Image (cartoon, rainbow, N blue to C red):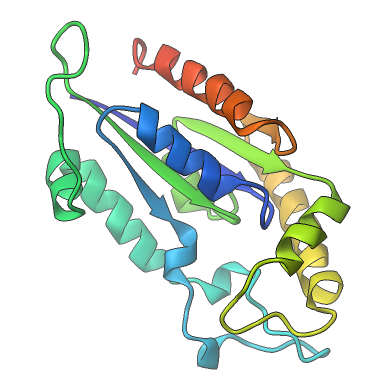
Length: 199
């Protein structure tokens, strides 16, 4: 059995989920674990001196639970997929070997050391400030973003987290999130398919 763990990181509204879902559609026996599924309850997320909830920090996430789920996939990808209601197609390679891919997507996946060490491939989606702010303003969050939240917390934390990531993470592939979805998918899927022969 061949197993591949792909990290799709990036800034808020940079296209992580879209690329991840597109990848899942073309990679055989693949599934997604999203970091956004592991946010702590709003009542325990701390507030900064400006009154902004500190969501853009690892402390706002149940990273232990996320790691538990990822390790469950690592132990038995087929059983994990079946538990998620996903169909397993075996064998999938020309040589008859089973290939399973886990796509882990999130905005701080590369900033968490124990998780970062598990990736076979790391991609980071980036878009310009103006586009990021526009996309963020068009989405509905629960709880909703307060006035000034993007410039007062989200963007400064993105810059801080990105610097920490770049200082510690190797082998990052930066992607231009303004490119067409099909072009991004083609670039990443081709890259990953080539790795199947060396995993």
